[in-house]
Amino acid sequence: MGKKRIITIGRQFGSNGRNIGKLIAEKLGVQCYDKELLQIAAKNSGVCEELLQNLDEKPNKSFLYSVVMDPYAFAYNFNNNNYTTNINQQAFQATFDTIKDLAERESCVIVGRCSDYILRERDDVLNVFIYAPLEARIKTVSERYPALTENKIKDQITKEDKARASYYNYYSSKKWGKMESYHLSIDSSILTIDKAADMIIEVFNNAD
Image (cartoon, rainbow, N blue to C red; front, side):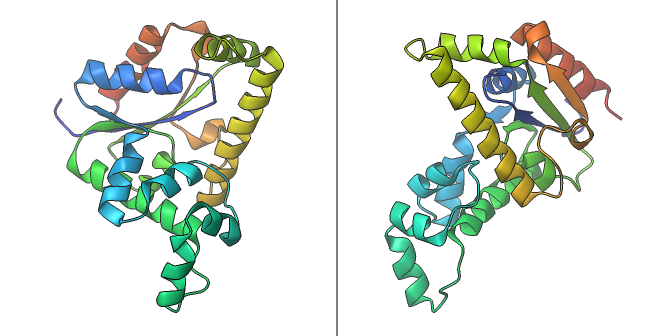
């Protein structure tokens, strides 16, 4: 592949961003990191994986919420005389360090988790945002979860997008989903997953 490059994928819920990212990685012969990031972050940082999962791409929650999710958090802070340690920040830092380390080691595809912002100082990164009209996303999610009603699906889409936007906007200086925050934005409803992946790879291969 020549020069090492990393592709980051921001995505609306139900836009098939994760599937596009996985297919890109498969076509390029590299790893795609999504939920796998949390396993690696937990192993390397010592932060509980369950805690990372509960706070994954979620808005900054209160310390009380974090203690409820991880009852050892308070004891950890008490024993270290650090009452103001923010568990959310610990979780983000663990993910931050993992993304940085992966980018140093290998070419890869990284899905979400402010990866475009975390790697903003690198010149070997292509930042992509995948979006689609609500109707198309409802159809995609309904195929994934056929038992859900359309109203439930709409609620889930709104909830997930709001959480991702809040997380991104809190930890970065950019706005989630805004065109100027990315190198490339793609409406996945007008392309097959395969064609979307090929388009991104073409840009990837022709980037200076």
